[in-house]
Image 1: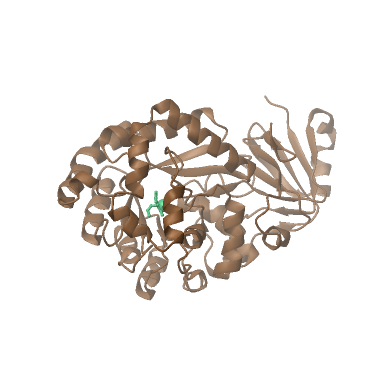
Image 2 (image 1 turned 135 degrees about the vertical axis):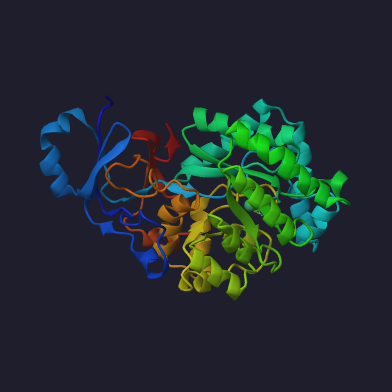
Length: 424
Ligand code: NIG
Ligand code: FE
């Protein structure tokens, strides 16, 4: 048995309680449950109790001696942040393309001429397991320092069975050896490889017939994602890939309506995807269908920011009843950031979300977007003790002072892993 941990007297303890059965929708996205003077008692990796300090003190006063006590006065204590959409297992960077885009080239032009995803695919194919592990391990440290305790990681820079499995294997090793929990997604349909350019259907067949069965057999992925976009995979090809994944137990996710309207949101609703991500150009009809089917909308304002594109219509999406989550989309081409708190700033400043909504979107709704809400995403009895403590007296400060890292302490499975803003 490990030493109990007692976090005491937070100016604000934000629990996110009460959104277990399903993600928070509409007005419920502002129900974050704030307890002033809140405390949390943790034992054996789990949250045992959370509530007003006086209540917990009464229960645990006889055991104070044996506990490690953290004074949270002056601070905000929240569930560990969750990032439900990243591409962190990759090699190389693409700053030259960024410079080209600043001069007017577009993301899709660069990709069509063999750069973009193809460029990262080449460097990732050439990298060994060890090199990929080291590079992603560093990125995970940055995520942890920015308050993230669980993230989703996609493959999709392999584009052959061998190299897709390599990326997924590295993600599994990171899950085992790094403090962070990783949830894996297979994304073999991230791009049509350059040498298959003239025969995309043949590549789709390879994803369906060769890759999906092997990936499913390996047990290395939980979700199956596709880049449904004009010039990449059509809605018909995407449907085929997502349905094939379903037959092998892989739950669909989709990169939908990122650059152009392409009925990606509609497809997400049709195939019963757990989430549809991006949605910059999602149609009203697609949004309505997502709401109807309870598909989580994962919004990635860092991508719109970095591609200098119009932001997703978060207000419309939330008001239509789609549960919304937020993510970095961390990747070397369209969103090279490792800061989820900055994405929360963008959620407020560029998409009109409220400070409460962005907290819901990066905790409990993010947990629902990757199917882990029974373990993470809120501070409730029985859940894994994943907690982020910010050095601010109230949650409004998090979106008010933007582009800063307010993380003071991070607790993962009941252990302090970041202290005073430094890795332990
Ligand atoms: O989510 N859109 C496709 N995939 C990523 C970008 C990947 C890349 O450019 O390397 C995205 O934006
Ligand atoms: Fe992405």
